[in-house]
Length: 483
Ligand code: NAP
Ligand code: MG
Image 1: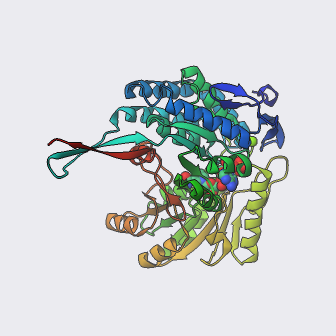
Image 2: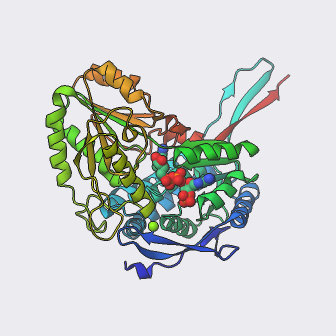
Image 3: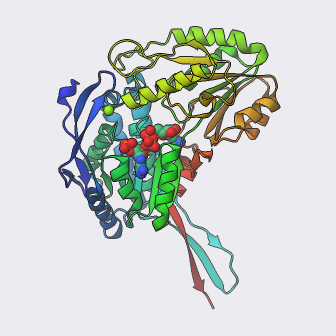
């Protein structure tokens, strides 16, 4: 698909494709070429207000929350099937807009987004209340009801997948939605809106308003007509959203950043752990909230492991993300590339040993070489802060208590992994690690049925699975006097 054939993006509000009220637009670019892809209408406060009004109308008067749950399920399933039938086209858009490889977008992001709609389609008919044994002669039961209008704000690292994780459960529970995609990657969310429209989703049930966080995002967070904000993004923005949402006491779920420890014990399957460590940090060019950015290696295995990891890294092909052989695309934007390079600089200045990478390769595109630092001390900036790029910090350890303590010494708690053949050690470590997800002898596995979310400053609330859909409901207690 030549970039010139990508049509300009509009706002999707109340079932209509519209310009922004102010006539504002912004450009989205291809980070592999640094060239603009197309213009997209920029939603501002007035547009957010129009979208919230449409979503409120669809919730209060429309068919969506009132139709038989199975009918809602059928529509969501249809959206999943339609996404799947357009994998090639949507994956290409996603790769052009974000720089992620076509292999990832066509095999992982888009198919998983389709599955997410089908997974939550099944939940529509399984949202049940309870009967509660209150004092006789009364009777009490609960209803699990939708929240109303949900505002959803997503980042640029998994654009279509984050849209699916947010939209599918919210709609399954009978809510209506206003979605603001990231300004760097608005195109796939607009494709999702097209699919929803063609599938026959009633007007106003899903509204998609691209724009900037400081303008459209803030307007959504502060809007009195929005009942909940579901946010995925950085911890500082999550904190800002929490402050701003307090004015209207909105419900919140926050999926924030991470600095996840990946712990390899000397008794691990080394080949598997090398692949896991590499995928853990270099998958999606390191722009992964659960990236295994702190690699803890047991002393006796350290040198041999690092040699293998370096050799493995040297084989990763970096370049055109549309080439199926490419393993590492460009960072999403110039800003993000510069941020990653500045962290690499700090690593060098603070005395970590550069094993490989460490620079921007020559030529066009916002690429950063896959980079490994050894000899990282826990106090160094690259051991503490989320870099969100292909930069790995390697730290040595001697025993389990020491590594658990060091791994938990982080403001974040999104994910962690342990590699060992000792089943007892694996499960003890899994319990001791303070993280919302722990992988044993693997890294980065996801499933729509799992609960996913953070401990500590990685946020709160869970997405996916039963926990994920419940976050889009509220409980009503109903009393009946039988006397
Ligand atoms: P970000 O800067 O926090 O932005 C995320 C989204 O929030 C974007 O749509 C952004 O709009 C919007 N936003 C920015 N400021 C806002 C404000 N004041 N009010 C409302 N919305 C605002 O994060 P990012 O750089 O796009 O994404 C990287 C971060 O996301 C990393 O920290 C990563 O760990 C995290 N992440 C977490 C998970 C998880 O599930 N825990 C998953 C993926 C990513 P703009 O388009 O204008 O920036
Ligand atoms: Mg882009």
